[in-house]
Amino acid sequence: MTSVASGPSAPSKTRLAGSLYRGREGMWSWVAHRITGILTFFFLFAHVLDTALVRVSPESYDSVIDTYKNPFVNLMEIGLVGAVLFHALNGLRIIAVDFWVKGTRYQRQILWVIVAVWVVVMVPGAFFMFKHSWETLFGSAT
Amino acid sequence: MTRNPETVITDGGYEIPGPVYSPIPPVIEAPRAPRRQRGRTNTELYAWLFMRISGVVLVVLVLGHLFIMNILDGGVQRVNFAFVAGRWSSPFWQVWDLLMLWLAMIHGTNGLRTIINDYTRRDGTRVALKGLLYTATTITIALGTLVIFTFDPTL
Image (cartoon, rainbow over the protein chains, first blue to last red):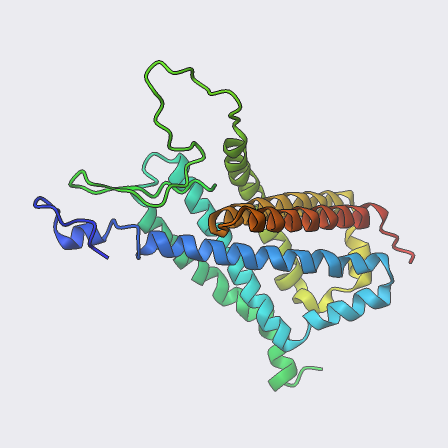
């Protein structure tokens, strides 16, 4: 991973490792951005189709929306929200890298900031999204 | 191609290039060459710019949509035909959903176009995948737009 710097006047290993792209935060955020983008885009096709059922009949729409209320599907929705949220935050990071003079210098720090924001949003988000499913499965809710 | 200029300049002045994502092809032109060669366009630049602008708008539209639909006031459990009818009785949410549909579809299509360009090796594969992508996108945008404009709450 640190093979890039092998010249005689290469900076110290630790300092260089903090700014490497390949195999480090820069690369992995790029990989995650692709994967979350593809996931969201494929879901979007399915979502436009299921919403199109409002044009068929209220019953057919309600029956397909019922699948979204299933606890297992509910878990996948939390995954989808997590994917979209990462893609949104990392997209803002990319914009910062592109348009902010110091964006490139701080791209690594910005990534850890957005990861922190992601966790702070996802913890209560997942809680409220799964609340009803939890009560259905383990609680006393109707 | 997506611009992702995560080329990093270390404190020692080293330049470590990441993969090249620049919308401007890395062509070194001859001195005093005409500024733009014939037949070259700025399509990739506009695609790059569109991703940034639509991205910012989608952050608001999509995260707002996810919050309202999945978290607020009972989340997805309260969504049904009547709920949709109530929302689309307001032009505000119609415009919101229409804009979100178009921007998200085009944003996603351009993203997948980039990925197809990156990973396909044979021209035939590339043309076939892009043809499939553009067909699916056109149908989905048309269907979604039709549904928003012709929705009948008394159905």
